[in-house]
Amino acid sequence: MDDLSAEELWEVLNFAVELKRRMKGGDRPPMLAGKVLALLFEKPSLRTRVTFEVGMLQLGGHATYLAPSDVQMGSRESVPDVARNLERWVDGIMTRTFAHSTVEALAEHAGVPVINGLSDLEHPCQVLADLLTIHERVGEVRKVRAAWVGDGNNVCHSLLLGMAKLGAQISVATPKTYGPDSKILARAKEIAKGTSGSITVGTDPQEAVRDAQVVYTDVWVSMGQESERAAKLKAFSGFQINAALLARAAKDVVVLHCLPAHRGEEITDDVLDGPRSAVFDQAENRLHAQKALLAKLL
Ligand code: CP
Ligand code: NVA
Image (cartoon, rainbow, N blue to C red; front, side, top):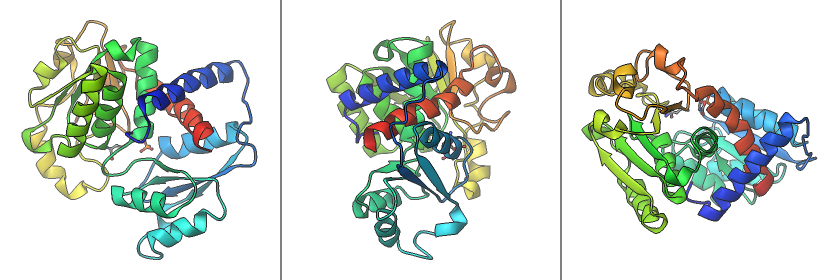
């Protein structure tokens, strides 16, 4: 997320709004005619795969899907060699990896843009869609009071950086040992200083959601953490987004979740399916936000 300046972030979001409006009117500008994006996955996906494939198609280009078992970066072939092959054929690479260092290595060795479609450290494309959703549902992002309740994970990291860049207020509540990465937090606080944003981090969900206009959560056990499941379920038991917790937020609070959701764990069915939930808008907005990003990078 930090690779985009605040100006570039606004540029992408504004163009996403325009592309969305034009698409609803039947206009699909073929801005990427003849361009090809490689989709290089180490983990499963519904939203990321489909929105990048459909997005490239709608822009007149093509996406080529590479499943986790196809390329096997680091075992069948080294990451730098994968990058040096792909750059000869395609105009950009979108990748979903276990280690964030794999995304960085691809970017270092490929002469084409590399987009992070989720790593263990960040999920910036998700947050582009989330910022668009907040803009649509709540209004000016820079005045928004948001809360993150749950794991201080990849989505939380990108959200902290993105909200700080746009000057919003965000309050995070996680169990003590599952807070956000200290480097990301320090960087987000530094950005927020320059944008009049604010970031607070604590361990009390009720305090974090007080008067919040946006409440965001994600799964407690991310992809790659399956062996930590029992310990995490125990640690997160008081961090569920449910009607009682939401009663402390602003009356018209908007509930966000990047999906997939583990219903009954981090969020209840009534909240996820209720009138406050914007989770399927978020999923739709992956398409529009990523098309704007692709148009800029490719
Ligand atoms: N939110 C998200 O990235 O979904 P997928 O894991 O299905 O791509
Ligand atoms: N934090 C989750 C997000 C899934 C889109 C994970 O990394 O599995």
